[in-house]
Image (cartoon, rainbow, N blue to C red; front, side, top):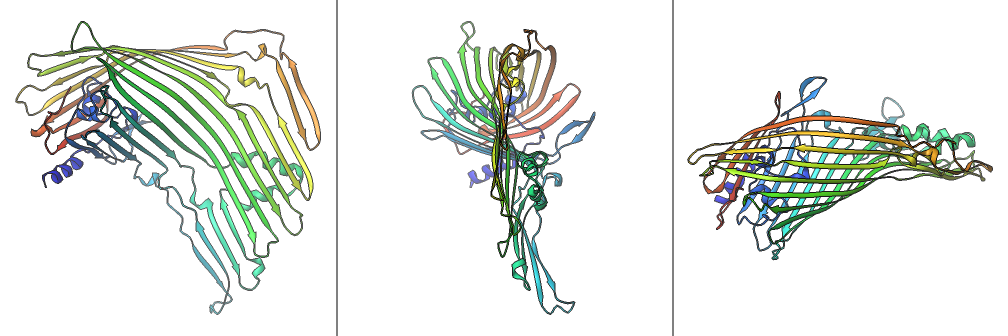
Length: 567
């Protein structure tokens, strides 16, 4: 019964009252956040891959509910409320192979973020106002719609494998979706039944593409080509955004060195999709169209950090690490189309528009020194961690390039082809390189004298960042290849293996310098209870604006032999 009550208290007490969401891959405690990373507790140790994972020998729950309307967001120079309802839950189990898992779902319950589904039904037409006989019916039903316009979901699982190296491994998944442009009314199935003339009955499926869109292509071959190659047809489709990432963290120790590493792959996919199908009962008319356009930004990153004890101070440590990553931007479109009726022998076609992906490369190197100070009875703890971070990212600046269009069509049994292949696109010679250096000095203070019922947490992080951005366009220094067009039997070539200009220019198009000085601070309290439980609260923002307020509870379940750590 005691465990049940403690569990219930934990879920009710661990209520988050902040609108701003945290970086999922930096999941941690309020104490760690408030003190600018200076101090950690059981939540940090057991929900992150590190040497302290598995050191706590009692079960505990970590969870909370977001408060609608909490927090403020600047809009047009004024503070206004923003809604970010959040549910999160985690559980830690100290078995032979200790493990923890955590899930979080976040979506506003505001009516502006709810997608209201359409209601289908059947409409009957009678032969007279006396309703003697039904002459036709029209039944509409709607395809399933997303519940929220914007939402996020996260999942994490960690397990300690109990080796001499204290090896920890895990899996993390993050997803966010933006379905703001989804219109339920434009995703409908219609079934029409004509009781007097069954041949006129039909079934129609429409997902963002209507019969009028398809009929655009019934005219000349040029109209058909305009339809299939996109034009306004693809551009007019609603854009939906899905972002996801997978991350595999590991941690282990060798002697006094603590290592953490992670492999991450993620992608943001922007899609425009449309589908239409129509068929009447006697099969004299049949229309079909399927259009998709996908733009994806994908990144692959390898991260590594090592913590090294300081030789001159037993309580201090050095931190060195970095990341190496590649990113790719692709852009592809696909169209399928067919049409036939009694007057036409039929039209059908397909089209693919592809590009070579834009490629980028980035590297991040950082180092820090953690300095810890304590009063004689550890009533006051102070941490300062001077940190230097250097980042470089370089990539093509023109997006996906070398567009290749390939398609074919059959119009009334007459073959119609169009193939256009462009190579040597000058976009590949546009480059953007960004160099960033940041110096920060995060500091944290924990004040909790003996016999005090409440303690105080303070944190501040001043930083100085400078960025240099260099853009270049060296297209004139490279030979161009041939561009070949085959359009309905008419072949033409342009370009050739020659330089587009007789001028060699290696001067950057632009070089920009920016400087940024920031200061972030947080104020919090901590209330310890018997048995290792504690309640933490946070106020955070900048000097002139408090942006969030949070409360977090830690309540262990049962009893254990090891005391709760509080580093």
